[in-house]
Length: 558
Image (cartoon, rainbow, N blue to C red; front, side, top):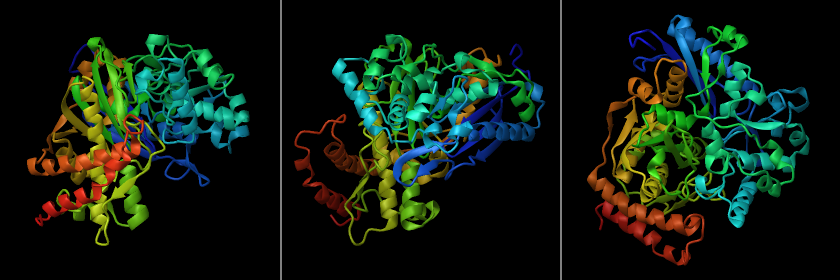
């Protein structure tokens, strides 16, 4: 934008687990003029499930088309701007959410022959049906001395691209035979709205690097020999195009979509990325800034200069050049369930609202309940990278209340977050501040105060309540020429709130003791970096007594 006072806007579109939202943003200030949200029409809360298999979670690709049109059209109308002033569109999505497509890039789930076939749908990130395949990929890489899992924490995940493709090849040959390629949702939507056919489709380095083992060090994706060793013919889904960052143009808004949403034809659309990574951009990620995107699960994002020469960090989700910011190594970690745990307890177990539970739990002192929990109700994403772990609560008595358990679950997720912080710092990643965004950061003062006390660090809050969509809008502004680069766009469009959460010294000390107990349970049941800790079983004999001792001190009885 040649004149910084010129009026211009960008649009960010954020595809979440249960809904899609679009925002219209002033590129000069980051002011969000309008927001529109649409809940997916198919499945339970937007997710296609199978009661026979609790690990299965799919989505219908028809929702992606309808979601874009309905939310962008509504947001543009609500903003009341001249559509001609929209300079660019950015898109983020959940990931890894790969979609089987035909030779033209059409999702198989949209074709009549496959409309009732779950394997032909989008494989949502939280689908864990491929846990055995993920284990095989990890084992094969280690046995061969191949580098492929070295940049994703040393272990491949059932949440990711190749394990899901391999699973489909094994359980549904009909869908596999019709699948020309698998396309990440973050790449599918930009191609959809720009009407870009498969051969020309832009693959984003974000999803490719963090979910598909793509890395420039080995020339892109794993070799055909490696993939075919997992399953003959698997390499036919190995694309050769170069994966690129989100400051590149994926295509121009097609006439058919432009007319449906009320925008000019030809608006630049940025290469897509994973929602949490764009959330980090919208929250101001930079060297030294650790961003936590806190929702149903959590994703932690950090960056370091490309020349920082960091070692591989065991137990993280990926270290990928330019996956978050151009010119930076993007580092991702996270937890497989956070808000999902609170929702499970509130709605499925006790039938109490979050407000009721939070009010009662906020009156409790750290350690007063005598409880410690493990936050693995949907497996452990990091640092153990093991989907076959499960939740645990230790220290219950006949007097334990729902509020005490609720608080213990919040504390467990905070302890899990601290494990990640300690791991990345141990391997040389500097953390000067922690910025939080997402639904929990916005809606749960109790959780944020617990996180501040457990981590013994201030918990800052992103200025935007729609950080992923804002991050997408940042890239929309860059590809539309409103800003010269992402750093300039971030300075103009993002920031943190003046309020936040400060740690309390006394509470932090109690949590330091409880964290010691959590760590004992963590290593005993989960191992150290996924390997059984030697003699771990014998270390647990004092856990319950230690919790009782901490409880007594918290209640002034000891």
